[in-house]
Length: 63
Image (cartoon, rainbow, N blue to C red; front, top):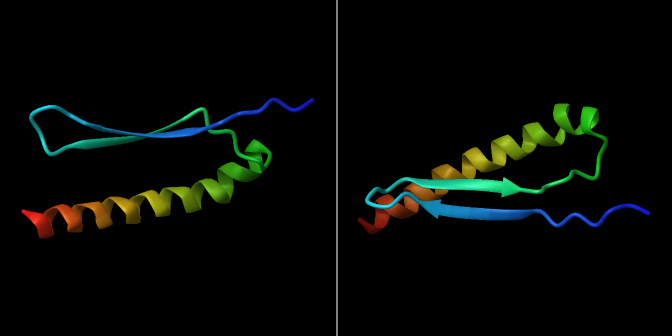
């Protein structure tokens, strides 16, 4: 039987700064690792980069 993994996304703001750390915990891709590493992982990296830019624009807009 396949284990049930539930990944989670965590946002932490470093106290006294405007720095936010985003972390993914316990994520298990549905693709085999060697395929995920060269395909979907690259997409995830791009999505997180775009998300960071989006958050920065929102913060700059409100300051």
